[in-house]
Length: 174
Image (cartoon, rainbow, N blue to C red; front, side, top):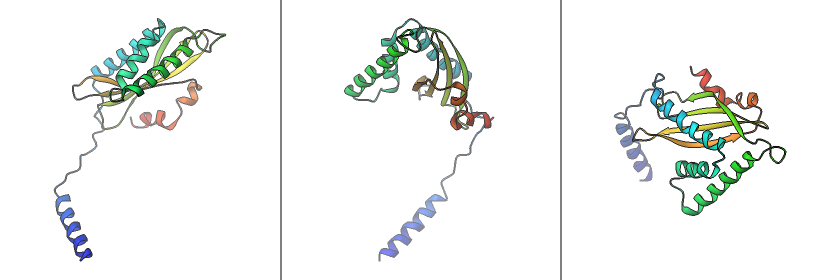
């Protein structure tokens, strides 16, 4: 009896599966230029605030952007965590490692083949004491608005950071 059920279920699934069509990979599908420009403006806003030492505004923006579905306690915890990390970045040498931001460059744009709604920008920021690598990931929502989906920074050697497999992948997909 049990085997008959499995056979009937398998036949039913196979009949329906014949009607399901797979979506083909469109490797020419990339984010629209206006999405890329909007993402650059979001990053510029963060760097402008970092330059002006407006760390609270940056932390609030990050939590509002990537933590929209967090509960209030997680939002407070994450906001305080981001704020503390940004304050540490802002500490001038010799009290801190980085200090005042005086410039930044976009050093990589990464796209996922077949997706025009999710992409990454990598920046290097120049501070009075050292440099940082910043990774921004963006998502284009159903309203066609570019939103910040992830932000992170690293003090790793930029050449090592840029040679990791996930950073090299977009280069091989071109």
